[in-house]
Length: 158
Image 1: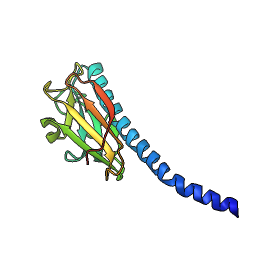
Image 2: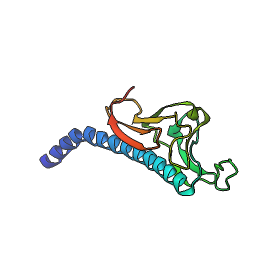
Image 3: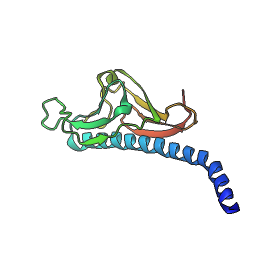
Image 4: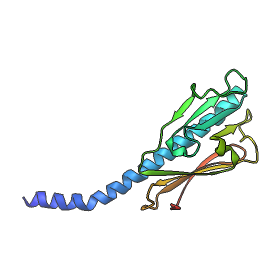
């Protein structure tokens, strides 16, 4: 009986640590998936020598998901129904905030055939964090004008 009581006490002490661990892993997984998709889009643009876009499912909320699309027939239209890569929506416990120039108002981020952002004056950054910012767990995924994708740990801005 004493062993069960001790096990219960230890479980109660460890539960908050496990919740923090799960939250950190969720943020890292979501950031990793977005960074992978952005790198994939850039490499596909270079490989195809044609523009490739990363399109938000909902232009107002990149946390709802995104897809990588290419102009496969080179008619300057991007068929959203034929994604090359699909990004899943963020779980409700995570917040996804974007900071970028005018392209995101259109709901997409474009890479040129040379792998740079189109237009070159653009930049892109997404902050993925705990939805309530109760934890100081956040990862920023960014793309510079040359098209290079980077991630780094930062603090929650909520």
